[in-house]
Image 1 (cartoon, rainbow, N blue to C red):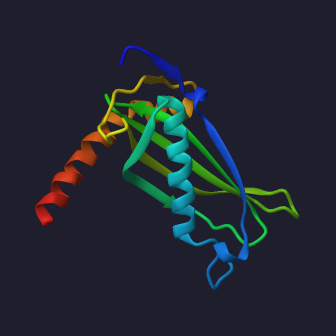
Image 2 (image 1 turned 180 degrees about the vertical axis):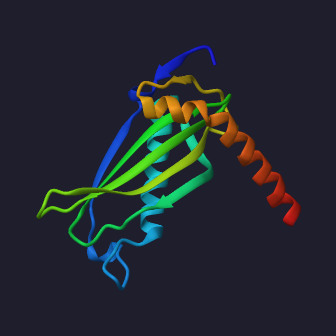
Length: 161
């Protein structure tokens, strides 16, 4: 990593309308739909940071805090919070806005690890990241702890097979 980019350079925001096909029998958005949206924005954010194609290496944490309903505006924001040699941790938060009231609620947070790859699917180096906001700095500072935990879980998963 010879270069580093400010976290805001690749910050990505997507806005979606929650429609009936996106929801379950309770009229709230499917968790799987939210996960697909999260994976998509994490990939776009990581591609913007690295300038390369990326693959999802892991979804490290997902916290479903509240739900969105049909007619809500669903807003996702992704930002690169740390980098390794070929990997990027992307923090994603999702909020829903009730169109009638304008009230916005945090619905979901997630941290994903994305890996930059070449045309043969081989990992390639990525630029570092410079956190800007207090939240980004806090997430950046705890990245080594998350990496250690992720590696332990990977080893444990292999032992189970």
